[in-house]
Length: 305
Image (cartoon, rainbow, N blue to C red; front, side):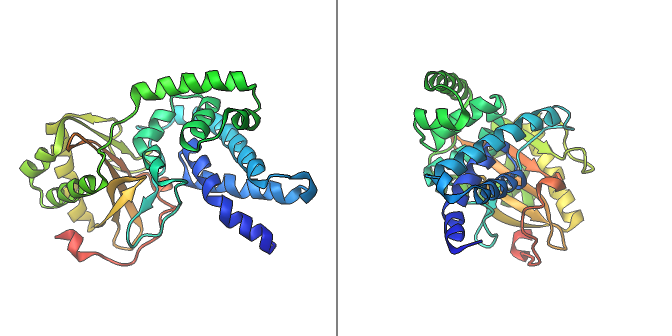
């Protein structure tokens, strides 16, 4: 790779990864799309590419559309609840990705990515390029290979669909983080009253084990009482498995990563917060979806208190 290629890779990789990840809900597949996009650029003569950014964006988006079409059939056969591969950032855990823009953080949330699953692949691409990344309609039309008027119709239809179901999040990140700290402390202490106080009456728990983890919750659990009992059971399992915990931001939302004694990730939990309460708990334990999370050897004894 030449110096120019390396510079271009450094500049455009975050954008391409951000598009591909939001399209696919998979960090591993998004990385594959990024690599394939740059390989295709490398194979094309320099004088054929006037705008490398436009070329790479088009290739990455089209590759993502193709992959998503195949993935949709696989997800219909998925065992239990399907959740995206979580992206984790905390003070000690290296970021797997960089969001394209800080104000687009909510478009990374697990809840939002699950909502996008209800759009077809082209609708999803058009919506993301327009609403998250700010592309103009003529640019989007060239990317997806459709007429501009058609793209406008697709964008309007997708926007209406998403707005009707868009998850609500607490405006203050600091407030979300404080509530998350109290939540995980109450769970670790098996304090049922403190835990219940933090949960919305209609809170929902979603677990993704992919049929590969014994004891994983295959279907959503609804309601404060049932979710509280479920979380207390998890707290007992955590002690039995000797898991350590690190608070983290998971897809832009407050959460935590639980590690096995050998430092490998056991689970990732993300919290949806709205109205001063936790409205949803999303837990990913499918090991295939945690491989991209850096292995840890450090144990946080304070997190087990």
